[in-house]
Amino acid sequence: MEEGPEVAHYSLRLAVEFGAGPPPGGRAWGRARYRLRAACPPAPSPPLRLDTRDLAVLSVRLAGGGDLPFSLGSPRGSGGVLGRELVVRLPAEGLPAGAEVEVEFEVGPGSSALQFLGPAQTAGGKRPYLFTQCQAIHARSFVPCQDSPRVKATFEASVRCPAGLTALMGALACDEPPESVARMEPPAPGAGAGGQETAEFFFQQPVPIPSYLLALAVGELASRDLGPRCRVWAEPCVVDAAAMEFAETEKFLQAGEDLLGAYSWGRYDLLMLPPSFPYGGMENPCLTFVTPTLLTGDRSLANVVAHEIAHSWTGNLVTNGSWEHFWLNEGFTVFVERKILGRVYGPQVLQLHASRGFLELKATVARLGPEHPHTRLILDLSGGSDPDDAYSKVPYEKGFYFLYFLEQAVGGAGAFEPFLKAYIQAFAGKCVDSSDFVDRFRAAFPEAAAGVDWDAWLYGTGLPPAANSYDDSLAAEPYALAAAWHFGDVMGLGLDSFPEGTAAGDLEGFSPVQREAFLEKLGELRCMQPLGKRTCRLMGPAYGLDGSTNAEVRCAWYKLCADAGDLTVLGHTVEFLGQQGRMKYLRPLYRALSRQPGAREAAVAAFEGNRAAYHPIAAKMVAADLGLDRGGGADQ
Image (cartoon, rainbow, N blue to C red):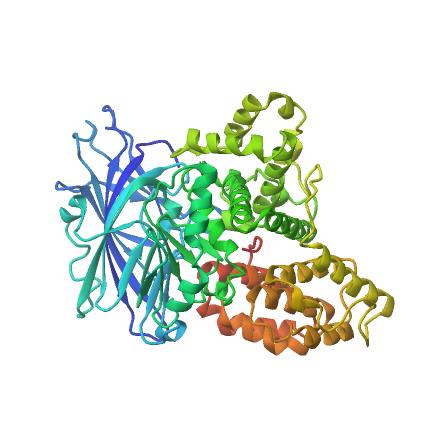
C-alpha cells in the first residue's frame, strides 16, 4: 500500500443476518468511521487508502458531511489475494480538526474472514452461528481497513444480531454504546433485521491492535467464570466441559505476568468455537478463540491456552511489523508458552515440550525440503504472495529453538528472562522487525552476540545451524518404547508378536503428553522406514490407539497407519476428518491418505463431502494439498 494517512481509531456499527438455509449462509453490513493519526497536510492531501476484498462499498463520506470521491483498484496479488484497494480522495485543503471518514459497506458470502454455520454444524443443533478469522490478511474481507500488522488502532463497536443470540468481540463489553458509536446511524437501515427481533451489543478496545486481531462471534452462548478476570464462553451444552478443561487459565495468566510484566488487556476470556474453527487457538485480545478438539477431559491439551495467553505480550503487545518476520510473533510465543508451562507444571515439562517441538520441526523440514525458502525464519513474501501459503511449524519451532539457543549462550534463564522482559516493555504497543531484537540483544550481550551466526539463523534454510540439548527425562521412556517398536519392526519386517522389552500395558503409566511423544517419535523414525501393516495391527488394539478420543493421539496414529498402508482404520480416519476442521489434523491426514493408492479416492470423497463445512481457509489449503487447487502452505 502506498503511503497516506494512517488510521488511529475505528468506530464500527455492524449488523448480522443469517440466511434461511440450507446451505448455511448470511450477510453482514457495516458503517466504519476512521479517525486518522494526524491531520492531513494541505496542498494536496494524500488519499486515504484502505484494503478490501469481497466487500461491496456502498458509500464514502465525511462523518456528518458530504460524500467523498472514491475508487476501487484492480485486484492485486497472486490470484487477487490482496483484494482491491479503496482509495478515498480527501479535501485538498486537508481534513478539519476532529473530522472522520465514514465508509458504509456490505460483507457477502464470499468473505474469507466470516464463516456462517447452520444449526446442524453447532453443538446445540438449534441456532446458527458466525465467527471470524482475520489472520493473516482476511480482515480486509470483514471491514475496510489498513490490513497490515504495522498499523495499530483502537476501536469501539456495536453489533446487532437476531434476538436470542449473543455477540462477542475481541474487546471489552460495554453496557451502553460508546459515544463515538452512538453518534452513528445504523448500517444500511433495515439491513440485518430480516423482519426478526434483534439485540445489540457494545464493545471497546482501548489498546491499539493490528487489523488481524479484529474478531467477532455470534451464536447461542453461555459463560462460566474461571477467575476474577477470566471467563469461558461456549454453547450451553458444552460450557461446563469447557470450564473444567480450562480451569487453570488464571494460573497461566499469572505465570505470564511473573515472566513479562502486567497483563494489559483487562480481561482474558475464552470462546470455544464449533468444530470447523481451523486453528488450535487464535489470540484475539480479551477473547481467545479455541477449538473444541481441546476437550479431552484431562486438560492434557491446555498448552494451547498457555500459548494464546503468551500472545498477550508476544504478538498482541509487541507485534511483527510484517508477515516476513512472523517468527517474532510465534517463536517468541512458543518460548513464553513453555516458560509458563514450566512455572505451572515444573521445568521438566518445559523440556518435554521443547523436545517434542524439535521433532515437529524436523518433520516439517523433511516434508518441505532442507532448501525450501519457507524453512527460513525471515520469509520472502514479495510479489503479492499469500502469507497463508508460507505458514508452517518453522516460525514456531525454529523460532523457539533459536531463542533457547540464545538463552543458553548468555548463561541460562537467570540472564535471559530479565532481558526478555525488558525487550517486551521497551517495545510494548509497537511493531518490530528482526533487526530490533538483534540490535537489543547485541547491546545487552555483546560477547555472546559476537559468537552468533545471525545470517545462518535468520536467513538459512533447513534445520538450525547449531544444536540444543534438552533434559529428556520425561521423554526417555516414550522415545525408548518408540525405538523398540521401530527396530523390532525393521528386523521383523512387520511384527506378529511384541518386540523385546514391550508389552500391552506400556502406555498405561504414560501421561497424555508422553503418549503423544511416543507417537511423534515413531513418526520421526518412520521417515527412515514406515511401520509394517502387521505391526500397526498389533500395536493399535493393544495400546487402545484405534479408538482413542484424544485428537492429538488420533491424528498421529491414523497418519502412522496411513503411511504404513494399513487401511484398517480408514473408516475412523474419514470419520475424524468429518468431525472437526482444524488444519493441524486435516492437512497431514489428507496428505497421508492421498499418497496411498487404496485411500486417495476415499480422501478426495471425504474432502468433497466435508468441504462446505470446513472454514474457507482450511478448504483452500486442503484442496491444494490434494492437488485439486493451486497454492498451499503448511499445517496449523
